[in-house]
Image 1 (cartoon, rainbow, N blue to C red):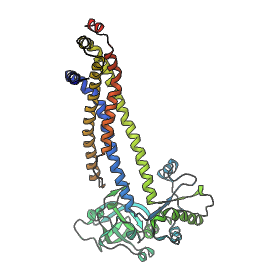
Image 2: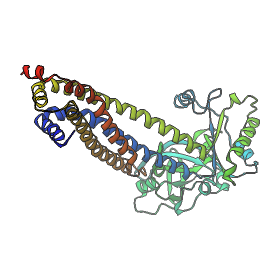
Image 3: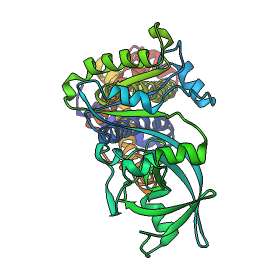
Image 4: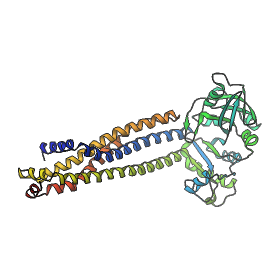
Length: 415
């Protein structure tokens, strides 16, 4: 193996530029997928963890669940998505939970949709019914203008509203909305506050919400007496697991449940939610990387086939080199170099395309209102280069060995 062997490999690739380009394609697609998936996966992980932490690291969420199935099961997910409504979660449950020594505050929530109008302006909005302590517990929410509603206004079913940033902008433009009257559905509400701009997270945009007292939304607009979730604030976040166990006991007592399998609720700390999401993200990344690897394998098979054809076409060249003193190792490494160089080149091109796609995803996500950080996975780059070299070596080995073992006299007679 010497410099001449490497130069001959490069010369052969240059001579068959079209074949080389086609061989590169599968490798480029596979590496692009690996880079984009790993980089986007890191950004998604940071985004989700940041959104969960915004609810408060010392918060516990209690939400409805289909009895007899696990909270994270597909059966529960399909039941919720399919329109199953569980009406057993009430604010009295939250008041019972508040008696647990480590729970210092709570808010309950329910959601609806309706059109909000002011004069000739109309905005389709999500109605977010919560109680007054929401503004104290949720770390991502702040008032920009006016104030939030009080517990007294909630208890008295007051028709007051706090607008999300975009709702206020769409309905009032540059005018001051505080004290103005808007119509939500068929009801009149007085605007008492506007939230600061927050952006989108998970399935909804915080800036398109209209915040209403939960009892007002329940009784006067939706005609219900249940809530969708409870957020409880802990005094000591390190006691999360013990607090969840106590909440499970309290909730079962509230709902007259003796068998834990029949729980119609699920309680989870924010730390547990972050751990759960991290596992899900890693699982999705592994799946997508495996799918991207299929393209690498296809590209590797293409390299093997094309190099096998190349060996057949260049039989005379191989025989001539052997006749003037080239050893089997020289021929072997010439063809191995061709395969490895092609795959490494494909890996480098794939890395460039992967970075470009990652940047494009970041731009689109930020334009949609998500706090998406552009990041490049250095681990992904290392994996990409390593996978490229391995694919080049493995799939070039058979045709290279075939070329190296050719008898020079037989090879020369085939010209």
